[in-house]
Image (tube, rainbow, N blue to C red; front, side, top):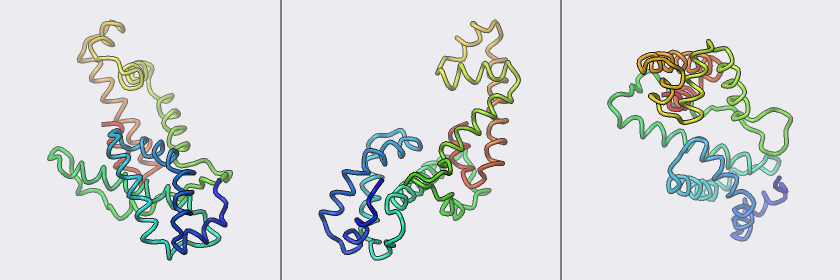
Length: 197
């Protein structure tokens, strides 16, 4: 947890305060960013850009608010914007149904020890619940293919079913999970669709 007295030095643009902030938060920011993005170079760029944005917006730092929480929010929004831009270049993905301004109004995550579970924890718990609600065969196929990373043919052979049956069960399982999670987290529709494509 960051000492909020650091906010004053950050707001006045003291370079050493930004060095301190970086040393305290950069590792966690990168790990958080990896929830959304798999490319390590992109992760580095997004995190570096977050500190630049904070520097540019330092006049808006509030003395009674967590600058750490602000940094995580900046990174999350940049990750979602990056995913949006990547998907907009793919013809097979329709962007028409999404209001991208909604992505800027995500839940405020308390990274300073608050009692409320973080958004990622809520999403993970909801995903586990949705998986538990799947029919047994869909659950088996989903876990083996998507969580264990097994090849579909290998799963088909192990379960004694056809490759077509594996594909069908996997499609149904992902459809159920998408619908369940989007109902609970409508502002994360893009991320959920990408994770369960």
